[in-house]
Length: 584
Image 1: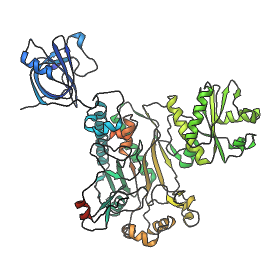
Image 2: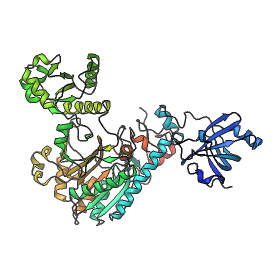
Image 3: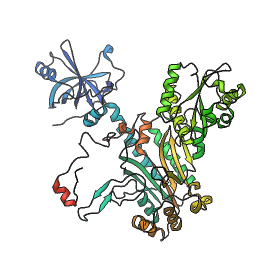
Image 4: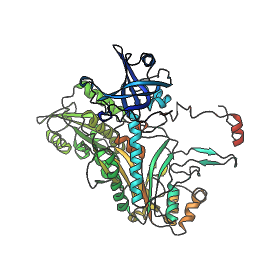
C-alpha cells in the first residue's frame, strides 16, 4: 500500500483535478448539512478533505465515524474551494480533496487535552503525554527550529575547518561545580563512572593532541535543581581552539551567531560589533552579569547622598541604589505596597519610593531630605516628571539582586523590550574565584582550568579573591548564552590554582593527574566557549523556558513523568553492581 504521494501542507490550485493520496491525523471533523469536512494533519500542515454522500454513500458512513487523532489514509481528487470558503491562513486554504477512499489505519482514544489547544494545560500532564504534546504545531516548529540551528552550526564550523569529535559519556568524577551523576561499574565493584558535566577536560586534551579546532554538540549532565533555563541534561555547542586569544574566540562566535539568527529572519542583532562590559560594570549598572540590554532602567548609586540625609535606613546602609521607573508616579498606595512586598520576597528589608512630578517630590521619606538632596537624587537617577524612583538600601549583594529583579519586572510590565531584538553582549574580566558562604571556602567562579590574567598572577598566593580570570560570557536578552575562557596550559599555574581551592597535591593527582601529566608534554595555549543550545533556541523561539524547545525534557523535580524516571531497579541488578539500598 502506498500511504501518500503528497503531504498535507503542499497542495494548491496547480494540483486541481489531480488524484492524490494523503495520510495523517484527523485534526477536526465537521458535519455541514450532509457534507462532512475533515482537516487532515501531518507535520507539514493541514488539508481539508470532503465526503459527499451523493458521491459515495458507503464511504460517507466511514467518514461519519472519524474522530480526532484517528490515523487515516485517503484517496481523492483536488478541487478548488468556493471563493467564500477559502482560508487565507492555510497554505492549502484554496483547495480541498473530494475523497474516493478512506482507510482507517488506527483509531485513537480521546486525548487528555486538546492537541492544538491555545489554552493552558498543566505541565505535568503535558510531560506525561509528551508524545501528544509534541503534536502541537508550536512545539513541532520549535524542534524544527532547533534542527535548523544545529545545521547552521555544523555548516559554519565545517567551513572554518573545525573537526566534530565525540568525547566519552562515561568518565571520572571530578569536583567541577555541580554534583555528578554517578554510574556504578559492574565489572569494577565499588567504583563509579561519572556522566560528564561538560567535555571540559577532554577538549583540552584534544588541543594537547594537536587537533587545533574541535567542536561537539555535547550532552552535559549535572545533578542540580531545575529552573526555567536549566535541565539535568542539556545540550551545548562545545568549541575549543589552539593558539588563540579572547578576541579570536569572540570574533568567531559573533560570526557564528550572525549565521544562526538567519534562521529567524524577524530577529535582529542589537549592535555590531557586540558591546563589551566588564563584570564590575555590568554588576554596577544592572545588578547582574547577564543584563538585558534591550531597555535602560539602569541602577544608580546614591550612597553619597544617602550618607548625608536624615533617613536612618539610608545613612546607615552599606549601599543605596535606585532606579527611575518611567511614567509610574501615578501608582496608587496599594500598588506601591504590593511592590514593596515583592521587594521583600526578593530579599530586601523594604523598598523606599519617591514620586517625582513637575519638580515636586511625594513620598513618606521626603521629609528626611533637604530639597537640594532630593534634586540631586533625581539628577543621579535621570528621573523625568511622572517617574517613580525606587530604592534599596542594604549590602551590595542584596541591593544588586533585588534591583535586578525589579528592573526585569518593570521591563516586562511596561513592555520596554522589543521581542524581535537580540541584545547580545560580552561580559569580561570575571573574578577567578569567589567565596562560598555555605562551604566557607574559595571556589572557582567558572571552572578551575582557567588562566588568570597575567597582571593578577602575583595575587594567587596572597589575595586570590583579587585575581581576575581570562573569562568571558556571551549574554543575550537577560540570559547567559555562553561561557568561555582561555585555559590554563601551564602545569605550575594549574597546581597553584588547585592549592588556592584547597585541593591537596594528593587529591589533585587522584582527580586530575592525567591533565597535569598531559600539560608536561607540550600543551599549546588554547581556549574555547560553550554556547547553550537549549537557551539559544529558547530565545529564538520566544519561549519562556527551555522545556519548550527540548523534545523530552524533565520536569522541575528532574523527573520524566512519561517514562517514570528515575525508577526503581530490581535486587538482581543491584546485587550485580554490588549496591545495597538501606531503608531510612
